[in-house]
Length: 413
Image (cartoon, rainbow, N blue to C red; front, side):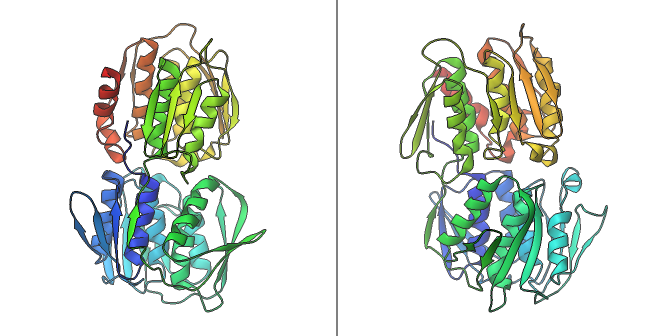
């Protein structure tokens, strides 16, 4: 099973390529709604692209977007919205950023507040703390230190980090995180990609220290397979016998969600690692074990664990998943409702969910809330031998347009 390109890496690489000097050839860049939204936004900012069957070539603008005024529609792509807010805050232009109705419900105040405290002029055009935003022309920072909260979304910190080299003073920009940092592996991913584009960030006990620098193109950049997407097929191997092998991520992956395979190991599944692949099969004896897990390191793939928990020998608890509340939908609430439809007993809290496997499976029609991960997760319930009907399956186009075709092909094999 060959994986599509990582959404998290693709959108970061697209932005960094656009901000870099010279051009960058991106290979295996994801082609889905979230990346198309980013591409459309960058085109609106004057960035040019060339695409053929094997690569997407981005012509860098050297840190200065050619379009000094633009109105950008960013759908429900959080990676695009948060990173572009930071990248445009001190670019000297006037920009309006908006998205779908759900994006207008997803908080952005922690990022906007941090940027405004160091001299940006960002205004809310609707409810305070939420998109749409108006960014007015500003060219320089008022301070070489900024404090940001990142306990709601790590994308706030990632966006600020990616913009920092271009706006920092000669002394650099020191970024301090106020309180707990959620989903830290995504920040580590951001730092890793920044290094690929020529900028190394120092990190002491409390702060990130970003130098004033220009991004330089690596020339050619290969996007890893998507570790979050891998979780669905690895889960299928663990609950339906297997083996199932995913190609494109493995032991050398820098995505946090690759650690989903470790959670399957804890549950008793047999996992085999290669440099660029992972293989999963069900336990040789007995059924999967329940688990109680802090999921901060696998925030997206943890949704798939909620489905795997239905096949375990006892109730499982997933903790530290508060970020689910502000994703494409309130994923904790949505998971609880839909899991009960198939017969599970579910309890939920502000940042946790507890799932007791069904005593009797029930055929169900699943509402997806226009959330791609809900559709992909709940398709796996068919492995229990019960029919499951997925409403609005087209929502998977956000990150994996041909998911159901690939799933059907795998099952046939």
